[in-house]
Length: 334
Ligand SMILES: [Zn+2]
Image (cartoon, rainbow, N blue to C red; front, side):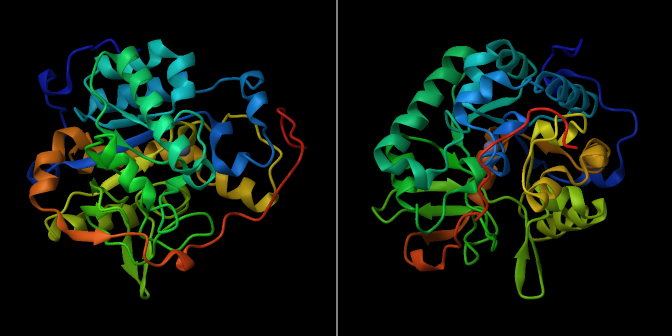
């Protein structure tokens, strides 16, 4: 763990802060803390009951991220899976001790549409209690596994509001084979569920091109595209007076992770750019100021766009991935 346990604000300024970084307001940096085998792409080849048999890999990339954030005097939101919080409570405490925000990513990475309202309500409350018990701090925000909050699952907004979550970051304003609400506002706004529940929504960063929103704020596109694309999108958000929401997973900084027996296309999407993600993150940290969602929440709320009602066009949701693989090999793919 990092030697410097002081909060980011108490650390000395990094030596080479650029003019732009000094001028910019803080954007939100977030990490979905889960193992490489929790990714939805692995769901077809790794069974839930086999998770505990796979080699855990989370600690090293999380420690690397914490060191990078400390070095650049940045803080972030860590959306932590309950399964991880239960197995690695010390890792959760280490993240919290560094001054970062602990937030909820659900207990077992179940996509919202598979849970249904009652199980979803239990899932987010259980995950929040577990993380609050472990970290000793309050959990205010939620991110759905695989951004599975869509028009079809918009009832989840009502459930989140009823459970007093202050913000959500689960609605991706893009067209995608597994998730996304292409017509959703790309900037922070108040999401309204079909039952009238309201939650502040912080959508991941996108850029508008060729009449569509492209997801450049994290995940596979972030790993695939040159770093300047994401940097340009953050600058564009800044010009709109908005704060970008950038997201990554610790496993995206771990090129040595076991190769799961996924279909070829899914495997490519899961592994593309793993070796260069850390360098790209470092460049972002050098160029922009980043903070947790909790630290930016008042400022974001004061500039949030108009309320947007979800659940109207359920037919627009794209279907889930169509592949299914029945077996897996935890070893290296031949
Ligand atoms: Zn996840």
